[in-house]
Image (cartoon, rainbow, N blue to C red; front, side):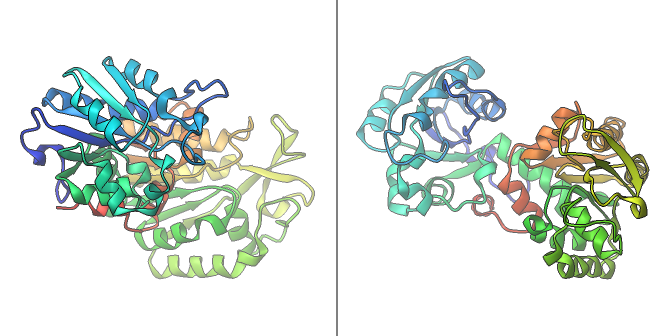
Length: 402
């Protein structure tokens, strides 16, 4: 991949110890069973490639927010069986990530084994980016590889300092993420559309301010659209029936002005679904903007809005998506998100659109629509994906530049 260090740049890895920074921070139930293996599954190809090249692979990761060593519920020992199952190789778990215990385990490694070290965040030095601690961490390793794009926005010891101390490169997943996001936002085929949903303007200010300078069309939906509609004179929207943020009206005006100055077309809902209550299958109806009832609750956009978004999408060659169009977790208020997602997936499958999506709610919303595997790329990263879209430099990506 141009401009970044990849595994191919590392040369001969036969017999070398490769420390692989993965993101194995997977969801788990109260019995310590992994409930979603996506992050494990997506780093397996990198482990397999390194092993094919004759490397001894030592996997490191954080997990949860532990309160120091000995926090059993945040131990990576619970992840080891799932990694073993996904990899089809024996995974040896070591209950520390630095020190003699790790050094001895590395020396005792067999060719077809993988080591998984204990949670990096058992040590406060990890989050502090401590270089001396990072030196202890990489001591048994010859080479460092990062496959943790989802934590690349953090300048933690295992993300930045460790990469400085050994020959380093991106793993396959990290390279795939960076390539997809570069294609989606930094070097897209135009016209480029962004869809931004979510409940509050205040949580996505940096994102909106960056996108209006980069994209050709910006769909603003979800609760944050209520603030923009209020600015545009939709008086029926109030603090009782919507998620309008009255203290953000001037900010919304500024975003609209910046969009106009940059020839970015803003696409807002033209009709809205109002329900009697915030609940699945609540009694509801679709209203034009001037007919919105004062006492309902706005949970989705209507068919006219969906048709308009899809028509505009037909004109585009690239789509970047973050956030649902409505309360997708409550049926039938997932209707707009589902229909637009399915239309984007159909355009992608027909070779007419490059579609990139990311952020926790977005991934769940696309899965709910049945299209999470039909986009060009769906990022598992939350905060890192958002910060990339906000135009910020990610320390864990910058360190991988040639």
